[in-house]
Length: 377
Image (cartoon, rainbow, N blue to C red):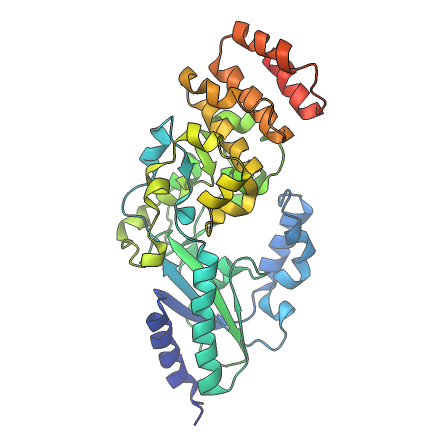
């Protein structure tokens, strides 16, 4: 017989979610206050979404879950802990190594979270007869406001979710359902006067507390941005080649986070230690795809990744790494060629750059690459 008591179902859902591998679960109404949608609309209208066109394309459905599914009553918000063993930030001082964001040092979490969401959702539909739909962050759901409304944490000054139990290290997923169960109380804000996340940002991407301009954010620049990285920001990226953890890692609430216990989310040793920049610069498309098979890194493609690696080479301060960049001056991808020019301009003396310019500039037709050569003169 199908279970119908909402309080009993809520307890059963929590148990089932933990059994499926989720570390946190909370419940809220499948609707967000109009102010949340208005804030998102203003954000998009100001162009802060940059090249993330999908935000504008899905805006009407994104402002509240019921705009996407009018019959939804409850949002079950679930979290998986991915806290690292130690502070990841010391790797930023390793000039010849590449820094990959903690969340991308293992297999793509979207697949893992979605699989487990479906497991819980199928069970819920079977025992209660309600309708269910599952979502991870590739869907048009404002998961951080929902998670805060459900009491899973609060949105810190860096705009990300902070949990008293898991710090900044939670992957989120949602089950929307027609089931009506008592919602949990929202979590209160516990940031206080702390500004660590705001003050550490290398590119000054925060325009105010809880306001970010992604066009200056290193995660956006290394993952979403397709063209040359803006010249004014390149030196601030350091050796970060995929994402950034600075604002997450400095949060004092991380001291309460337990190390990730999920085998599937344990980091790859090579990515945790920082891949060799020179080796990463030498990846062709096939080697890139093989190395990052099943990884979130794969989605940005070889050309964008090598662009990021070359930026890191230019920031390394190690002239011995120049040959790794010089080999890419004739790369088929303009974004790679341009990044190679910039990296070499940071690693070689002017006389050597002038010699390279004589050999490579005349055939160059891409305006962005020519501009890099002119800037390196």
